[in-house]
Every structure is written in structure tokens, then in C-alpha cells.
Length: 73
Image 1 (cartoon, rainbow, N blue to C red):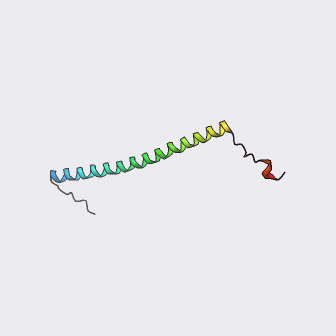
Image 2: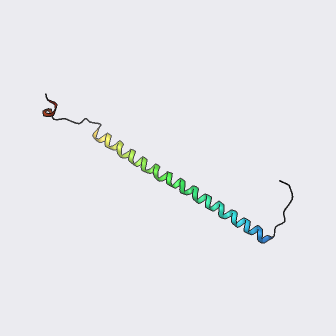
Image 3: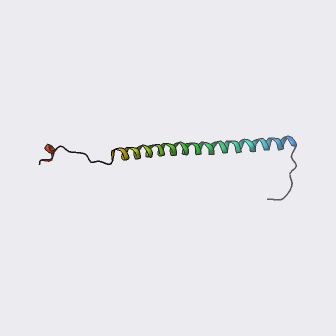
């Protein structure tokens, strides 16, 4: 590449700036969508973990009681 300066018209510079703004805006929208998706999954995982914790705390692990008639004494 050379270090030659390119003279562009003000209209061309404005078009370049607008294209850059639009590209950055689209990229940021994609990033926020990805963060939002991860955030929702994280909140759901925490809610499920909290539910399981409460279930275990209130009911304990417990074992399944098998009727003695099925065990064969």
C-alpha cells in the first residue's frame, strides 16, 4: 500500500461515514442479541437450580420405598 492521500468529495465522505455507522450498529445489535440469549438461558438455569434446591431441601433425597411383597421377603 502507498501512503498517498485520496481526496474524496464531502458527499462521498458522508456516504462512507453512514455505511460505517450502519455496519457498527448491525454488529452491536448482533452482539446484544447474543448476550440476551445467554442471559435468558442463564436466568432459566438459575431458576431450575433454585427449584431443585428447594425441592431437595424440603423433601430430601429420599429413597423409593418398595413394598415388601415385591422384594420376596
